Image 1 (cartoon, helix red, strand yellow):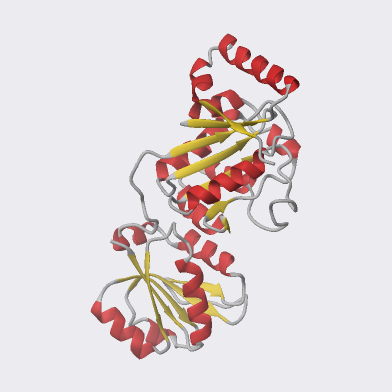
Image 2 (cartoon, helix red, strand yellow; image 1 turned 30 degrees about the horizontal axis):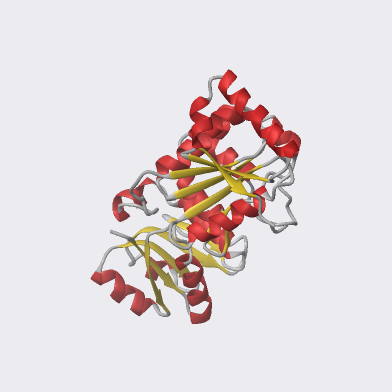
Length: 304
């Protein structure tokens, strides 16, 4: 059963725009209703339980007390606006992503029992596709993004760039949440990473993604077990049917990350030097006891 979400605001355009933004978030299982008067809200709340209510501060607290909802968020005109007991203030003129992030962070355990699940937990065995090559300049990231968009049109897909130099400003915009942000929340005990990802991801057509880390030295310092924990949490959450990892040999324990993949795609050029590098890589996998990784590799023609 999807969670019920009511937006009550006198400005129908604002409420409709917020609802449209939320409905694009495939990770969230919401039935969203927009109302423009407290009477409409009261009527809706009488018919069915509401898990989340977002309401403008223009309606007095005494009136808002009549509304029974799992979590109540009050849209304020000032970034220093206040809400009543049992409510959370939301500054209405911040970005929709920031609004969602605050709602995620302030929807406590009560929401889980009242609304069953805030996030739509999905079934299944998750495909984890590693994109990796010991040969550089193969168009690996372009291949990964193209593959992700193709798969994303049919399956809910997340792309993570684990390269030391992922190229913010190239394939990716300058602003947005990065892989480093996801690693931070992954390390926090008691924090549901799935909830956080719902407010963090950006979209490239049907593909969800996080920006690459901004500082390569920071990425080099991340223990391999932290990457493994992040990927395990994403898989366990069940938010995504497919996770695509764009991997770099410069990160720690990259072979262990490749071992976590269900399949590995290796874009390769057809020349003698590239073949020698791939041969050396495959020999190393065998010598280090990663024959299982070698068996997952699917060589792909370099994109032109």
